[in-house]
Image 1: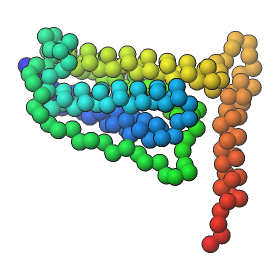
Image 2 (image 1 turned 90 degrees about the vertical axis):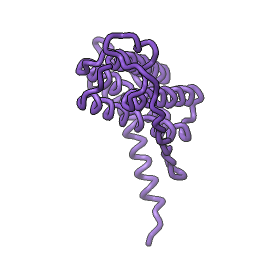
Image 3 (image 1 turned 180 degrees about the vertical axis):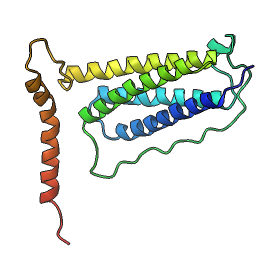
Image 4 (image 1 turned 30 degrees about the vertical axis):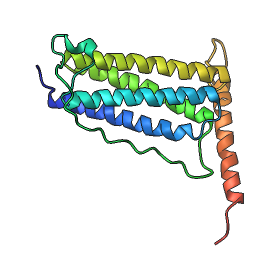
Length: 197
């Protein structure tokens, strides 16, 4: 049974760390979402990231890859070594603070794109056949997840593609005006609601 190389363990560490961050972010976002459909998507993203995180920790611990990969040339075999996974502590947002549904969806869209690229890049750099296949499947999931967040934002009018012949500068301003307007309102509210010391 081939062992993981130091560079492969480093790749697992980097991706697992990114997934741990995604899990904590999604847990925090669940307390802030207002749209039920977005809440369902965020919770699905959290659960899927946890599955991927656990799978990578199991691989790094010398445990078995998913049975789909055990019989492949170069795949890991054997049973998990029983290394307990430390439970992650969710982010607890402060009272009165949070993010808009648009910001949450945009962040998770960005996370999906980044994770898709990160996992497929790692897969191309790894010689372990089973691990390559596991990372390729994770990449496919994150591509699909990014598309779902894109479609959700497009339906809400939060992600408007640039049409052929459309004025690119006006399109850019229209897409970013709601964001910058809300920042200005928050700054104005903060300056008028400060208590003098």
